[in-house]
Length: 167
Image 1 (cartoon, one colour):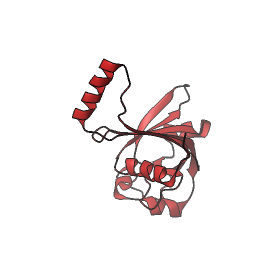
Image 2 (cartoon, helix red, strand yellow):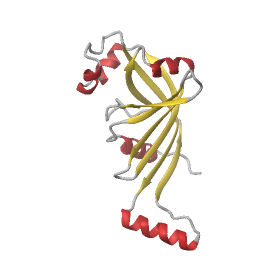
Image 3 (tube, helix red, strand yellow):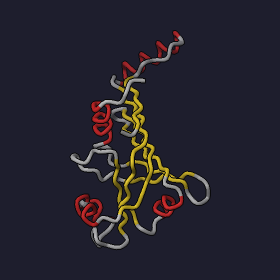
Image 4 (tube, helix red, strand yellow):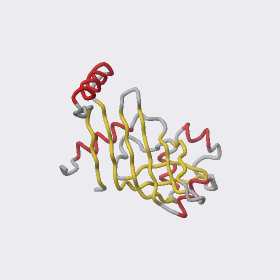
């Protein structure tokens, strides 16, 4: 497999930038993995190796992270056939300046007390592994490729699939 490039990472950030909600998955106390919709808070100039999220300090996801920091964040945009899975380690970050920098009206709707509210938890997910699929053809061509693959037994090439590892 080819080494990850800056272009691969740029592609990753481009794929997720317009996806409003991600499914944030953590290990729950019952041993199962629980997924919850969350909004990634990264700004366009904040594209390092961390995803940012706001959560309630007393919420189950924050308690789950305290028990086991391994998480997955999954993004899907079926309209553009883009799918991304991020594995990483989550941690609580106590940084008022960072909270204020990431704060927006969407977060304000969930946390009317503002970024200094003691219930506002800022979660950083340090990215360890990314896998993405980006289908680059329209639906008609996809159907044709699938039909051809069914007839020939050769799996279709539907677009770009990459795996990236922490830098």
